[in-house]
Length: 146
Image 1: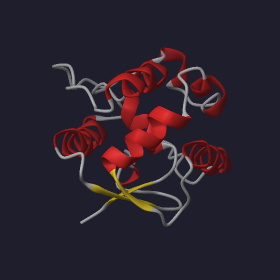
Image 2: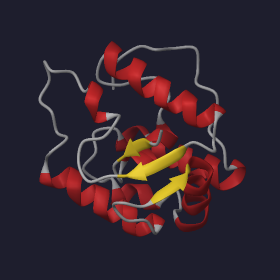
Image 3: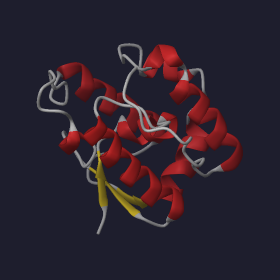
């Protein structure tokens, strides 16, 4: 069964370090992250709109999953990675595309309106993937916050 991901989550996963919008969101994101880290042959299906990560966004917070700015980010990142809605690939294939097509400094413009961009985690994640082509183990923390 394929993991369904929207465009910008292809890069968000690279910067994920165990923090997010809520405990439930982090548990879901960690499960997806660990599946991809431990099984890089996992099939990814690129979809338009809310995906397997969005499904755990907390209901008590203002959801941004359908904002125009998020759809713009999805499209810009898919174009940079060389993928489109409906494409399927192994996660290792996605990482190879990112490693070849995305530079760490691209994150600043691709994700300029993301609340997580100033922390530099995705920029660091892209730099790591360019060198190793695999996700790092998560730190021993599952706390929420920015």
